[in-house]
Image 1 (tube, helix red, strand yellow):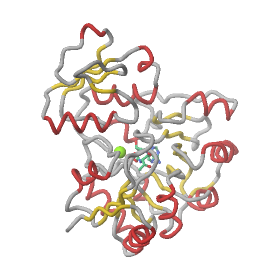
Image 2 (spheres, rainbow, N blue to C red):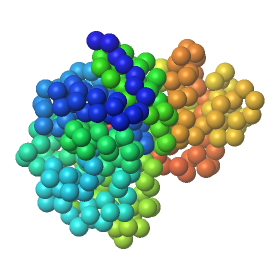
Image 3 (cartoon, rainbow, N blue to C red):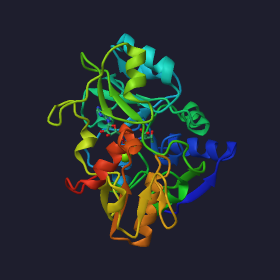
Image 4 (tube, rainbow, N blue to C red):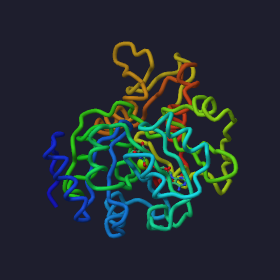
Length: 309
Ligand code: TXA
Ligand code: MG
């Protein structure tokens, strides 16, 4: 299959919608990372997503919607907290896990009775969903690779495996959405992201919990080593211990590279292109305090098996 990269335009978005409606997955930009989308009511297209990414079948997908009403249609028994959070943070980088409507194929949530839902804020993503309907979309990387934050990253992984990549330039945020589980009695933070735990607690006026590692509510995707480059990632807490030829620092000096949420995955991919053996990451107190960034760094640095989402 030939893979085309199309700059964003009304025509390109309409063409992408057409492919989606024909059951063909397409890649589209969001404010977090690029997504590999398929319409949720076509089980064959969902199966294709898992095979294109080589994604383990037991790792559920996030459904992307263009309105709160659409989120209500694909879920049921939404708690009051859902509306409060959606009204405050949507469109934006917050995925909310609710009970899944029977209308939605179980395949999407890997057989779980719940469904992760988010409304992205990228205008092209919203337009595509309005034209083609809700889209199940994991990050558009091959399993085991860092999430893609530009069209060329996607091309590097999925060339020959997808028909169309909509090119919206560099993603504004650069790491994946916060995932919050509201399907239990108590809210659980399954994956930290740009919407912080504090911001969510301020809206809910309630503490949210982090699931224990062996808990059944622990996000299925979290058991895989992901967000990881091929190079060994070492977290360095004292500047004088930095020694690799490839250094990521929040305050780079000459020869070092900038460590930021927005460029983390791009730097991981750059290290792999250069074939470096190790990446030293300077974890300053400010970096260590950034829950979303530290989560990705810890996962990239600890070897807990090789499978990814
Ligand atoms: O920012 C994002 O969320 C991006 C863009 C494309 O929207 N998408 C993304 O999808 O990161 P993915 O598939 O790479 O990660 C989805 C995460 C996984 O950790 C998965 O286990 C978790 O969400 N997840 C999905 N459905 C779930 C569910 N029903 N219950 C618990 N966790 C779920
Ligand atoms: Mg992913």
